[in-house]
Image (tube, helix red, strand yellow):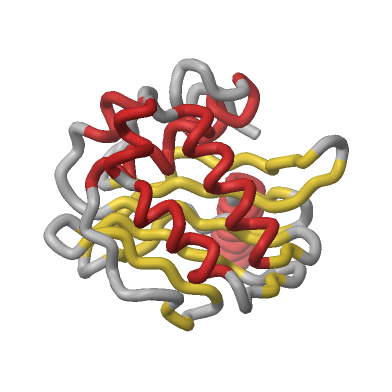
Length: 194
């Protein structure tokens, strides 16, 4: 009887482990963490998506918040840190990242917002000038209240913090506003699961 009980317990543990492994999110063969810690605060995965340029997969974007939200307005009302994690799926060059980021921000910003952040938008090119991301490299873009936007690649800080809430909001619009491409937006907002 004891052997049968031990076998049953072992079988139950194997099934639980398998269910846990199946529940873990993996995109394009790369695991996406369910939570991360930013500035001492635990954040939960709000959503994740594979992003493409034309038909090529370029990166995985994973978005972390203090609590899940399904709209950009809801995200911007949250207190606490936030994290956008970008995992490269192919070689990405800094000038390409900078050019696309600035173009996206300008597309979703008003003329007045672009004027308010003209110096910051110009500085993006300099921040990414020497960057080269290869498959698996990780770009972290954190919003830390009171400190600002902090960016790093593979643990190396790219620039001093930029304490501009408008810049953070504009950075999120191209992927999470109501006018953003639906597939990626809904995945990052947790409306649909990849």
